[in-house]
Every structure is written in structure tokens, then in C-alpha cells.
Image 1 (cartoon, rainbow, N blue to C red):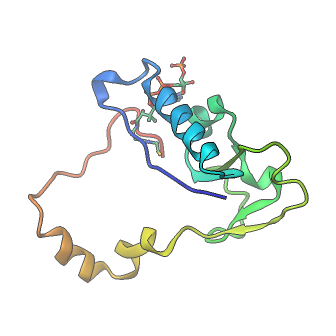
Image 2 (cartoon, rainbow, N blue to C red):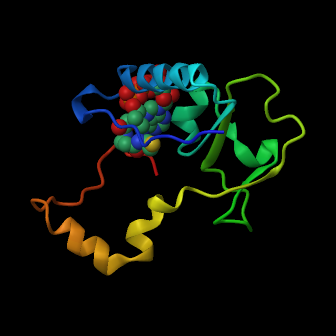
Length: 126
Ligand SMILES: CC(C)(COP(=O)(O)OP(=O)(O)OC[C@H]1O[C@@H](n2cnc3c(N)ncnc32)[C@H](O)[C@@H]1OP(=O)(O)O)[C@@H](O)C(=O)NCCC(=O)NCCS
């Protein structure tokens, strides 16, 4: 199993198919690398177009949200039947949580870079 992302497309190039092209290309590379299945947090409106489904429908739950069906947690088999007989829960790699687990150290590290305004832009999928 493999995770990846996030992917993003420059705002003025959105909704022209580049996001899907990039995603499908990445999926081909992942398959060539031998991954049997991809798992990612993302929006089904976008990832569903490339064959992703909500992972809980395939028996894979999101470890950090055990009470919910986590409709944002998605999977895509790259080898047909790879998930047959597999159930369980998935936890994101620990480095994903560095800002949450150690906010002071993260702020200190972040301060080494030129400041950027945090924005929420149209097309940003939650
Ligand atoms: C999500 C993102 C990568 C999509 O890239 P894109 O190049 O605009 O997407 P595409 O043109 O390839 O879209 C393919 C399909 O996905 C769906 N889709 C894409 N963006 C969508 C949106 N904002 N809302 C709903 N569906 C969307 C549509 O069905 C679209 O097909 P259509 O345009 O024919 O309707 C881009 O909007 C982005 O960079 N967003 C900010 C970062 C982000 O939220 N990334 C996702 C988390 S990993």
C-alpha cells in the first residue's frame, strides 16, 4: 500500500484536466513501483474520477477517525483484487503530524522562511 500527495494545480490552470492528468500519471508510476493500492485523504469529487472509492466501503478505516466512516479517506486498487480479504485501519506516516504534535518547534522552523499569507482559495478541496 502507498500514500502520496497532496497535489495542486495553479489557480489559472484549474479545471482544464491537468489535475487528473497528474494524478493518473502518478498512479501509473506507483503501479510500476509495485504498489497494490493507494490510500489518501482527498475529495471524492476529484479522486473519484480516477477510480478512487471511500476506503471504508472496502473495509479500510482511518485510524485517527475511528468512529466515522471518514468519507474523505479514499482508496484505489492498482492491482485488481489486492484488497480482497484485507481489512484494517490506516495511519498516516508520523511526519504528517509534525506541526500538530510539536507546534512550538514547527513555528520556529516555519519562521526561517519568508512569511506567506495563509489563504483558502476557490477550488481548494477540503
Ligand atoms: C483539486 C485540484 C488538484 C484539481 O485539479 P484540476 O486540474 O482543476 O482538476 P481537473 O481539471 O483535472 O478535474 C478533473 C475532474 O475532477 C473534478 N473536480 C476538480 N476540481 C473540482 C472541484 N473544485 N470541485 C468538484 N469537483 C472537482 C471534476 O469532476 C473534474 O472534471 P470536470 O472539470 O470535467 O467537471 C485543484 O483544484 C487544486 O490544486 N486544488 C487545491 C489543492 C487541493 O485541494 N488538492 C487536493 C488535495 S490533495
